[in-house]
Length: 109
Length: 113
Image (tube, rainbow over all chains, first blue to last red; front, top):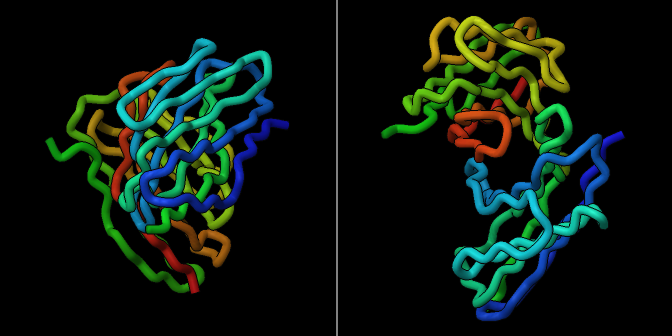
């Protein structure tokens, strides 16, 4: 079966750095997405990786290793507004998105 | 641009009732999707559409129906509501399926009692 694993919950301190991991086992691979979802709101797009390596976008970076079936989202200079759930999703060989359950990130002052 | 507009935001249904969740997008996207999101689980695809007049089942289509008469609109119909359909529903759209990000509606919190 297809599976995406990410930690259920993480806690970090304002101003610090946090890394949210995602491992996947899917039928084929056509890219990996990260979305942010604040409580009670819709997911919003953060990043897309299809090649190995690091993609940097301001305070957020996303890394992909296809051979290891692994990605991480790195958030720097954490702000209180970064408190949200972070969803990892993989586009499989049929171009269907397989979603992880999400990681709830709690930022403490 | 309004993006993806989804209504209603909240709804309570009795078992056996029916309802339609409305979804419209103004980005001229060909691809539209309906997802449900349950606590502790990833988004599950209910139905999707690759263009007007074309719909297909996703992972969890039972108990739902869709239609796509125009590019803009993609309503989701619940027939004979059951408690298992209590969930948060999201409509989404994208330009393509390959590598395009999804744009989501604001969601519908549905309770079936």
